[in-house]
Length: 116
Ligand code: HEM
Figure 1 (tube, rainbow, N blue to C red):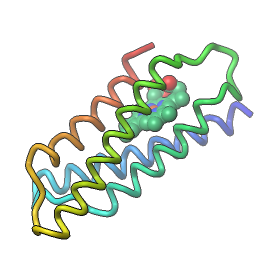
Figure 2 (figure 1 turned 90 degrees about the vertical axis):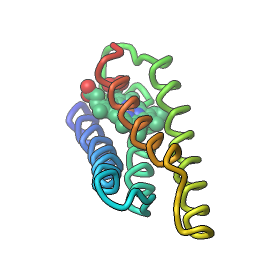
Figure 3 (figure 1 turned 120 degrees about the horizontal axis):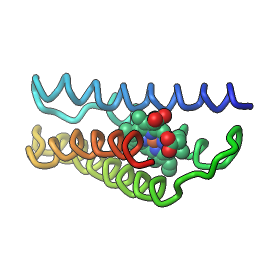
Figure 4 (figure 1 turned 45 degrees about the vertical axis):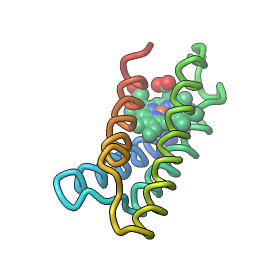
């Protein structure tokens, strides 16, 4: 059970890597929202929700941290949705919206690692 939980953490990290990695590529490039960002977010979300249940561990889960991360993820999801729609209409996305996606993704990773 414990090894399975570690495997789900790995999938969660792959989602984070896909979201943040594709955002970094755009940050040094065209600064556009891309579908791969949404895929990374969805992978992180599904694995994160699976990890939010207390299986394969003996210690308590930090539900305040998990709730905060869920709210931040929902905001990232909204930004990606709005950004995709605006880009389709006008061809570009507001810089604040683009940067917020990367900053909030980084904040979620920092919360995961630093808030014990
Ligand atoms: C962009 C969004 C997210 C990022 C970047 C992210 C990042 C991370 C990282 C880096 C870890 C590994 C921490 C470690 O093992 O030290 C982790 C673990 C975890 N994440 Fe996320 N996460 C995100 C979204 C979520 C969501 C939405 C949930 C649940 C609703 C969630 C729940 C968890 C849980 C339960 C763990 C394992 C236990 C813990 O360290 O708290 N994550 N996350």
